[in-house]
Image 1: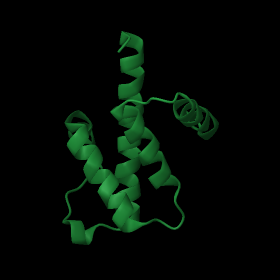
Image 2: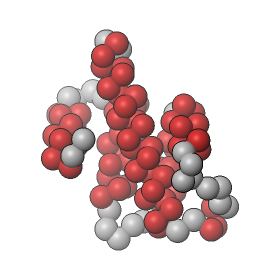
Image 3: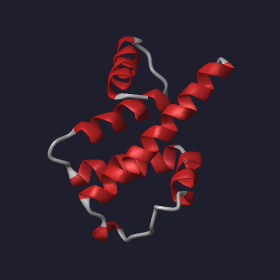
Amino acid sequence: MNDQQIELLINMLRAKGQITDLEKDIIDTYHELKKQPVDMNSAFRQMKSNELNHPDVLLKVTMMPTTGQKQASELTAQDLLYVLSAQFTFLLEKEETSQRSGN
């Protein structure tokens, strides 16, 4: 999915009115990825929220060969953006699967 398609999807979700928890997490994660400069505290909170709300996504991100384990105090902005980007991709896939199944 390219940036233009993602923007369109995010705008469609916003216009929808009542959104699901998954859709809210997609929008919130997208906003964190777009912030310049990166707000480390906010990005970290979003990453942890996604992990708590979507353990299936946490498992997928953890299983990626390029994902290493670090203490919270060791995370850099680049680390957070990498994990948020992966979470965002998996959240979008989850939403797509949900839409296909009619949920």
